[in-house]
Image (cartoon, rainbow, N blue to C red; front, side, top):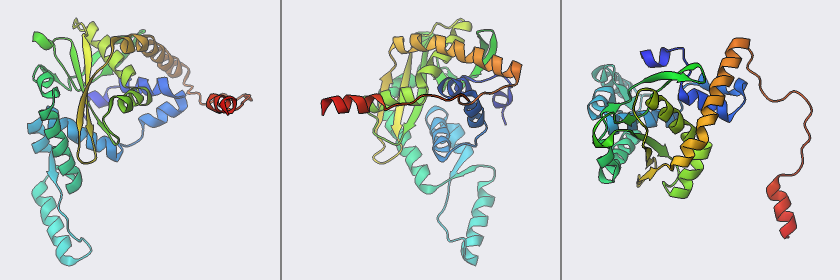
Length: 262
């Protein structure tokens, strides 16, 4: 585990979970192993942002029938040749390269050339709580100074409407605000955040979105509130879940609207 991940301070990503769900569930999420989608996203980050690191770290797997003696021998020989590199399923490896090539063909390539800090950890204090964050890429000097670039994958279409849903569903706006707050503590004024969104399914389209400034401003107090909640949970050693008292429930708003229309 690298020094960043082993640091005891909460990350902006962890605080985003705390903003989205009860502390009990957020803490459980922090402990879950990476999903297949997360593993694919990590490989894409390396391919797009650190091509040499991608070649050093990953190798494309081979299709063999390991139930047979010959297939098992071929697989063991392949692993010996792969060494400490991480084996990607052949289809996943091809998808990563296709997504990488899509990024290189779109406007994202121009922004990426301005970045001088790739996955550089940022440490700071929010609401009196020590926190950490690691944007995919940002620029500390030159014409790109203050720009953050985040590379994301999507299993749906990389359309504006779909990604706007993802901003709300996956805490992307919260993360962007947290990174902006940390950058500012390092005397780098945040100008804007660019999202490069790649489709994980063929034909692996790619789109680039500029996050509206009001999204970050709206999330700043939520980042502070999540940091304070984290401090409270740690100090009390209590990570509450859902309310324990009886709650009244009714029909959802969409049902009432549909009933009135029809």
